[in-house]
Length: 584
Image 1 (cartoon, rainbow, N blue to C red):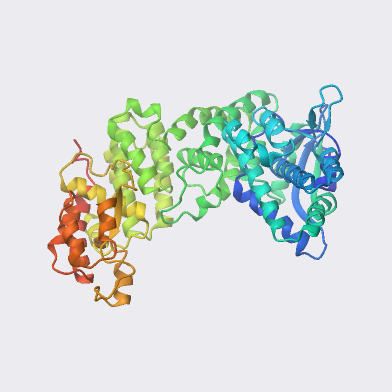
Image 2: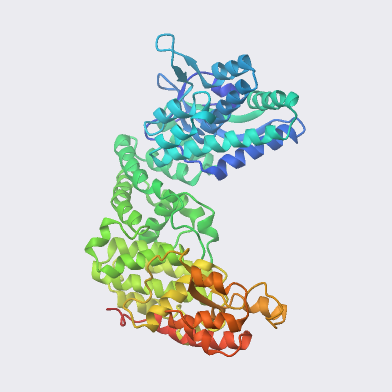
């Protein structure tokens, strides 16, 4: 099948001038976060004011011309953000008394006034999720004075992103004007407008219909001109569903509705070996990659689209995959929140472990395995397997250094569960026995572990305290109020003459877990940076065993810190066991 493309080098301003463009309903909603908006503004600012007058290339924009109104199938984020930039630039021109210049920006790039309704008809019509909010709260003048109303109206996540983009652009431009004398501010803004009109170039690709656009994306990707992973994946799947395209679009919307709101939730990538995962911050790519791993085994994010293309070669396979993905998306969303209704059918410990993994350990490398457990295993077995995931995660966070191996082994276990090779938690434990730090390795590493992340130190101490008190599920810690219970370093980072410790020794000992205690905020204020003699009196009155034990020492230095930490290490082995015993 031959497909006609028309390539047109054009500026963003000229593209907006051409007339109305609309975002098709199946296209994703506005997704840029502050980081992407900031990068665009910084790049443009550098090109305008620090460059040598050359044009600046901003990639490709793909437009379908077959309908009554041209459709944007790639480039929406850049075009919409540019329109937001122009709207806020217009506002500032009006504030500076340049009403005619502001009116020129309005009518040239943003929209025209309907002669009957006298309402502004924007040149970009967004999809159903964004369009009303964009037209009523982002596009009209005087956004700076309407921010509170806009924020209140931004009920949907994607509209919240539009709101924050507009706030960021407004603040960025205002800050740039503050550095200039009054007489140069208008010229500064007009240089932005001129650059967008004449120098901010894109390669606009005009195609006859959506199917042609999907085929073009395939071709561009084959030639090494990379679109986003999500766009490549979506467009490939749609291209395989020519006769059932509406069905494919509906399934994609169902998936997007469940996964896109997850945003960055639970993707802190704090554990080792997250390089591949961190390159893509898009929750849809995380989801599709992890689902694909359960079907095909270890797959790098950069290889996902190619692997899918090699397997889903026809319409029935593509639609079956989208249907499976739609069914799996609910379980994937559930692994990011412990209060999801899914966990009501599981033993109580399952939700507790989900909370621990997401809130206290903040690990993401294990997520394909957690997803496989949630999606494929029976509730009782899943609860046992999730307990293992908590213990393994703590052990790897303490022992460290096994990133590449972990990514492979977690992915292999996810594949085994997805293909019914592993159905029982005990079998999962056996297949990971070789890779998980043994009790001896864990205890030795814990005895000298330095923990620089306060949230992790708080969790470790709280869990060990529960074990010390013989409470059920010690590895699960309720999310206590950090402002009421403080993490205190007994040997302070900055100390007065009453701490007779070598500064180098103090620096090396400060973040040892043995130097940390949990103490009420009020008592912590009393302790401050006082001498150990004064601190130990306060610590002795604590309700925590692990805090009171520090008061048993006559002095406090590195030997005492390491001695205490050896005791904590022995309890750690029992707190995060490799067996299923110990829960009540």
